[in-house]
Length: 440
Image (cartoon, rainbow, N blue to C red):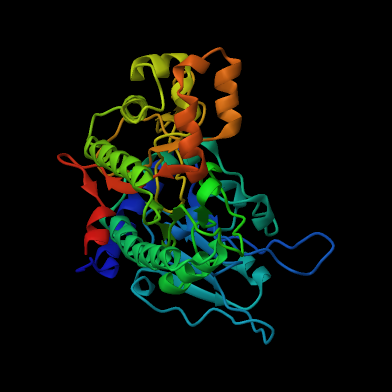
C-alpha cells in the first residue's frame, strides 16, 4: 500500500499542538507547558522495573516512546524544548542520539542524569502546567495537571491531525500483517500461545510494544471479553477463533478484531458473516453530526435482528433491547475513540471546558457518548456472545421465554463473535482505516 509519510506532515501537526497549548495555558493562567515523559516503576521489594509506558501527553508531541526521565517544555512564541535523557549506562541500552523528522523542530538538551533537567526547566514551577503522573516529580516540578488545561487538551485530542492519521494507517498495516499470520496459525492447529507468537513475529512487536495485551481466544474462551490467558494446548479440534489485537506506530495504536470458524462449522460461519455485514453498515454510519450513543443503540437492534433470524431469541429486537435481553448477548459498548491511547481520552466530554455526557440508561460499558465530528477516529466493534453468567441473569429476571435455549446450547461452544475496525469521521462518507488494508 502507498502510505502517507508522517515526517512530511509533522511540522503542521506541531503547529496544531502549539495553538492548542496556547489556548490551554491561557485558560489555566500559566506561562509554560511542561510534560515529563515518565519514569520507570519498580516492583515491590525488588529492583526489577515494570515495562515502561510513556506519558501520552508527551508522545503526542514527539514520536519517542522509550525515553524515560525526559521533559518537553513549551512556551508560547518560542521553539519547543526537549530535555533528552541519555544516561551513561553499561547495564542497559541507552537512547540513541536524537535523530529523525522531529529533530529540526526542537531545541534539544542532552542530559546524563535525571537531576540535570532541573537547570533546564522554567525558573518558576508555579507558572507551569505540569502534565504527568506523580512519580514524574523532580524537585519542585511536581505534576499539577490543572483541570482547565487537561479539559481543553484532552477534548481537542479527539480531532486527529493528518500526521496522527498517517501513523494510525501505519499501525493498521502492522496489525493486519499479524492478523493474517494469526489466522494461518489457527488454521494450522496452533495453540493460543502459538497463535500469539505468530502474531508478534509477523508484526515485529512484542508484548511491551503492542498497544494492549493480545486477546487470543479459541472456542469457549471467546465468551470472555478480555481473555488473555493464552493456553499452550489447542483444543482438538478447535471450532472457532477470536482475535482482538493491535499494533503501534510511533506511539499511535490500532485495535482490530476478527472472528473465524473452523472448516465445517458452517452455521457459526454464517453467523459470523451476518455480524460482519451488520458491522460494515455500522461503520458506514460514522459521519459528522451523528450521535455515537445512537449508533450504539442501533447496533443492539441490528444484532438482535440477527439473533432473531438465527432462532436464538424469540422476541423482536425492540423487545430484547427494552427488557435488557440484548445486553446479555452484547454486553459492551460499540467502541471508543482511539489514537495515542487505545481507549483515547475525553469520550464523555461535554465540551472543552469540562462536563460529562452520561451513558444511556442500561448501557454501563459504552466508552463514548459524544456526537461524531470530522477528525475523530473511533472503533466500531459489535459482538454477540454466549456468556453463561449473563444468560443466567436473563432467566433470573424472568425473561427465559425470550430465548431459545436449545439454540444457545448449540452456539455456546463457539464462545462468541466480535468484529472491529477503525473508522475516521469526515465531512462526507466514513473512511474505514482497516478494511482496505485487509483487502490489500
